[in-house]
Length: 414
Image 1 (tube, rainbow, N blue to C red):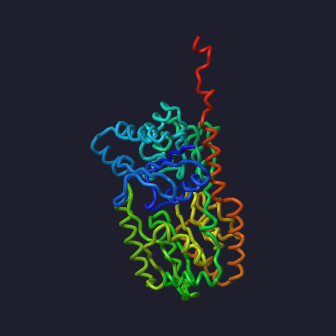
Image 2 (tube, rainbow, N blue to C red; image 1 turned 90 degrees about the horizontal axis):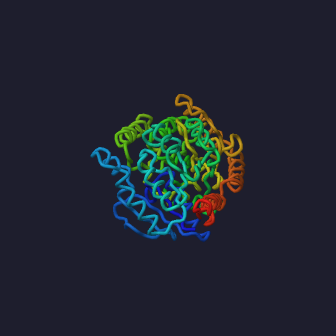
């Protein structure tokens, strides 16, 4: 098949959907399919290039910031994006479209996409990584799901599917399917103690007990609440270090909020005198496997509804216990008491519970090892890259209409 992938962001931009695509697309190529990605432009990157066998096509029209500007200037988004989408589909002879989140702030973008696909008799599958998007407006999301003729509606977690069914009770359930994330179990795999120490030395973490928080520095990921757990942890384990993977470039509509939150993070570290116990890195996605492997504990402290949460699965694959909040899809990956712990997402209780659980795991290495082994087995059983890719191939093949179904029946002609 010739599979067209559409999402406004793609690596090197960081993010959950971007990490998902960076894993899925090369695997689809490995399985014998041709993959074409239509995404936003980025400074310093060519408009068209191949990466891991995937053709990546970058156009300004895919940028949410540019689409917002169009709205401010009173321009017609539908008219602006439709030629770009049509050119992408026809020029690359696409058989099926996978639309990831389908620019969920912009109904006209989704409508243009599904209109082009319908005109060219190409199935268009929407993959929902969120139940609502950046503007947090469920009405926009509901309109996109109900008024655009999607061939299939895929959710990456049971939580997202349930939320969509609540907001759109009359949705055609036959179109719904859950395809959970899968990860590369070779890239994310356990290390020996000696191997861990060599990599720790590379990152200047020698001798430290690493608590990795790989979430983006945004308010609803609970970064500040996690940091507030560190005084108690450091009191018991003075060599403990919380590693944050770095600040993000603000995206569409969130510049002021991100700037304010970054200041709050810095102020919290300073006020709690944690400069020796909280490290703000400047890492790219390429660093995440190594950082996850050397962690003693991975945490993910979302205080709102997490759609799925890829990082705890990566932790389990590396044989590292994960501590997560009882938030959305996080409850579908981590098994409480077996592969890690699930704590409350209540901002007032989160810090205390996180400290308790981290101290427990540092205090009992055998427990940490046992949970890590159970996590690795769970990742192998439920979250493999091959399973995820094969699920997407199967749903694509089912959506592509056979030629005989496209033919006009004789009785209609008569």
